[in-house]
Length: 137
Image 1 (spheres, one colour):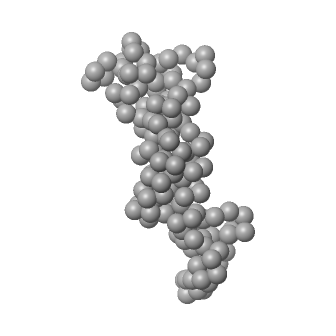
Image 2 (cartoon, helix red, strand yellow):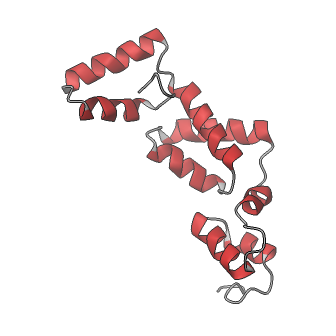
Image 3 (cartoon, rainbow, N blue to C red):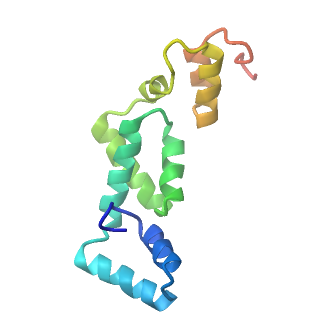
């Protein structure tokens, strides 16, 4: 697994358990990977965060949730994401714009942004007059 891509310790543990290793063997393998430098969660979290940011189309909270879902501790996920957002000059409006399909009906685009977790106030600002997007709606 480590030969293919950087990963979290939790994801590596899960993969080793799926391969049938006992808990003691799993921990020994994870410790060895850390000791040899093959597993570096900080580096891995930054790489995964950068991928999410550059791919675009997601709000900060959704990207953070994705990193946590991939096995990174919440604090490390936040640290890595904050670093990448700063380095890449990330902007929530630009991220939202990347999720909009050119020529698509505004109501459909608005629904997509809401489903991805963008703030309703931002969606109303980007799509004024879309039915169901009034204040409180």
